[in-house]
Length: 97
View 1 (cartoon, rainbow, N blue to C red):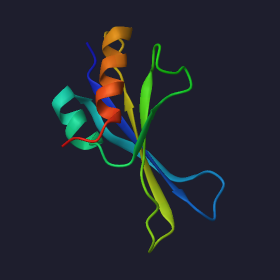
View 2: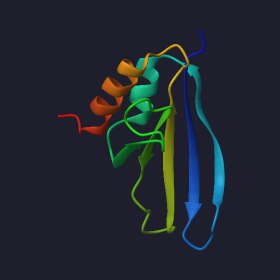
View 3: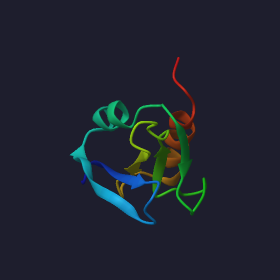
View 4: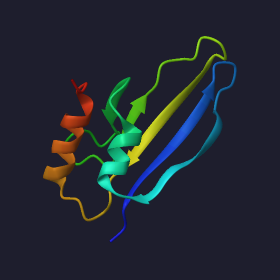
């Protein structure tokens, strides 16, 4: 089984595409993924919607000093069922208290 993956994209306000992108976590555990992905910023599923999301996107706020944004993408492992993907998407979309 493959683990949880998180990728990132750094976009510059003056550039059309991503300025940087890479891997934040490769084949990690769910706990590691939640710790990195966190609950700040706005979270949304990919274009397939909430029925069977393939990944979640955490939109980060723009850095006022640099004008760059850093977005995180939490990729679900293939063995996670659609129902579990929906539950995790709902849980991670809410701010933790």
